[in-house]
Length: 424
Image (cartoon, rainbow, N blue to C red; front, side, top):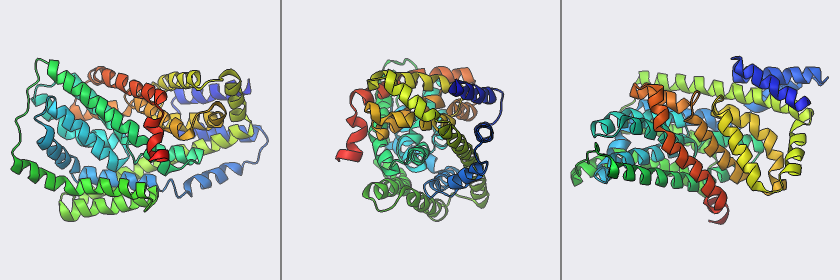
């Protein structure tokens, strides 16, 4: 009964419009006071959250992605990929997906990926006869690769909550990320094949291919530096974020010379605003998590799950359905911070690998990013494409189905997730 009352109070606060950070933190503090626990636990939880080496990667990755965004790196990247694959069936769509995948491997941010590539790709694809609905849906869904292909800010937060290896989470995201890229590409090529309005792009000359590739080479090098450094163990995810930020400044200021002082100021300001929002939510969730742990709610729910779910399949199905419904009302990070502390204790007893579950959770969070009414990527693409929300929402439906198919394949073939971090 206590659990139901606490969850009802939390959702009442959220649906009444109280910001997520204050709903979580305020309710957590109230629970500590009502339960007779020391109120000093709240500031201690806040300090332990902010004073954390792992979470330092969040502002650094945000700084890097915003610097690349303001420096116009997405435009050069898209031009290079388009020059090489644009003449394929559905070539512009393929170039868009590959550009999203590559930028995702740098930024760790879904919103930054959608905004960066969408600004360049949307007008170009519509001009080539692609359906407006298809284009908007492709960019909204393609942007979600930013939190699956490493580095990934939600994976950093998941690792912080569960105390799992962030490096292993990053590596585990590579297989599903590449699978999702492949499914998006196949669907786009089939769509172009049967679309009556689609106009093939002319084949680029070798001179154009090499010139655009040369301009995009520093960006590709940055992606390889970050992933290779993390994979080889040369540096931690936080160190990778710091190195990536420094390298992004070198690329945009000294090599491409596209980042202005005004652009840098905007990048820093936007990264600061997003970082403060994320850390406030994480801090509020930490206080709430401390309180519900003292009330033994995660332990009780874990016991309930173990008693009622002897097999992983029904548990995963129920969690997926709950996340789909929650995604209609809550943004991605809030879902993770509310659900993961409650579910994590039950994973090992029913035979679910926490690393696999982290990737599963992130894919479901991706689905939340493209489901109305609070899917952030829908709003980004709506703004970039100057479109109606209905257009974008209808356009993402086939891509949402492909993302759910990826979840199913990852369940049926766990090595898609676990092979790289544990067997390669």
